Amino acid sequence: MGKTKLEIDMPSELLFLLRETEETFKEKVKLWLATKMFEEGKLSLGQAAEFAGYSKTAFSEILGKNKVLIFNYPIEELEEDVVNNADVWIGEDLYEEVLKLCGEYGGETT
Image (spheres, helix red, strand yellow):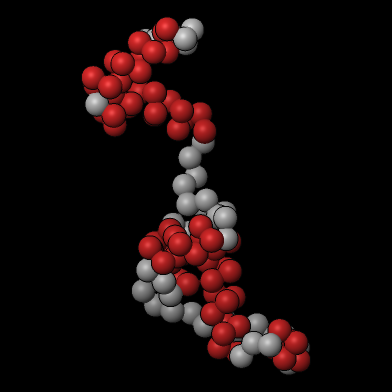
């Protein structure tokens, strides 16, 4: 993939006030931009990680530390998937036991 250079004009004293070198500031801006673009769904996790200069694992950890959700999964779909796939995830025998317990305590069973 080709690269495009982006230049930003800013007051020269800003780096001094932020106590940043030009290089560290560039890296922080790239990370911030990659994070925002990921949050907005404009870049995938892999694309954002590559843009910021990190592996997917390292970028995921950074996102987690900054309380950015990695999965954009509506809660309704998550609940549906958990219910529909619980027997696969926990095993059919345990799933049957859970259903029995739910029935005993007033929950609905399928």
